[in-house]
Image (cartoon, rainbow, N blue to C red):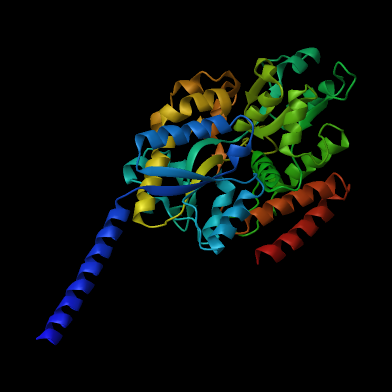
Length: 426
């Protein structure tokens, strides 16, 4: 009897512990949830307050969810996220650019947004926009807002050069005619004024901008299957233009976008291509920039229609189980809303809404800087996603530098580009 009683008590004790453990696990799954959001913008001037307010407001509405920021500079955040994942510590959300999506999907981090977000929320995005995030038929990112590469120009410099500040160029030929006059100007300190800026520095975003320029001329870099496709006149004409701009001294050599923004803010650059949100960088350098900055659609070149490459700041989502995915879904829906983005798009980051329900939001309609390029948001071309997209963009920068800094023959430089790029893509 004693032995049987001891066995029974032991069984009851084990069951009791198992039940307690199960109850604790259930309680934890229904308790507080922390989601990790990787966001380089917290380290950039002008954006920190917005994101801190997002955290405060979201946590107030969702007291059971805590946001933990993961930060690193723009050029390092991708490696930070991938390295963390390699150590078993995956973030839940990555704030980044559309060009990052294929690399994150290839690394096994990005989840299809349809696995995490409600379909009703996804259906409110413009179909062509959400399709731009597709890999094998599924979208792997969700945009906060969108932009083509727009043409920013300085109305004051146009006036000084005897040009109509309300009539920007619409073609590359018109731009070259205006650039000849603008290049004769000097600033108040006698510094050279560059007529036209196209970024060519060795960073992936410069390659994206050069890709957009190829689209301006009706060309392509990749075909629909993701294969290199540069045997087209538009591709050659775009890099012939890059070379010509350099030869005439119109384009600052080997410049990053931040360099062009600085020159534009200081009145030493008359026109340049940028993502629409680049204006925040200009305004942070010169608060008066809104008084002389206007935007226009990308230029038409050759037989092209001025198409540009769709750009987007987006969220890439990681599936870390139901509790964290549910919290991630709430966070994404909270941020991508008119309440949160209205002032942001009007005062910080000029851009165009990605959602149909936000088309007429005041923050966009009232933004004078965006007005001139508004139609260009509907004239974008989707870039085929491949895992090596960053490598491709860097090779485009190398090609641009070959025909500018190194002054190589255009056809020879294109042949070298083709050889080196095929080796990386295959």
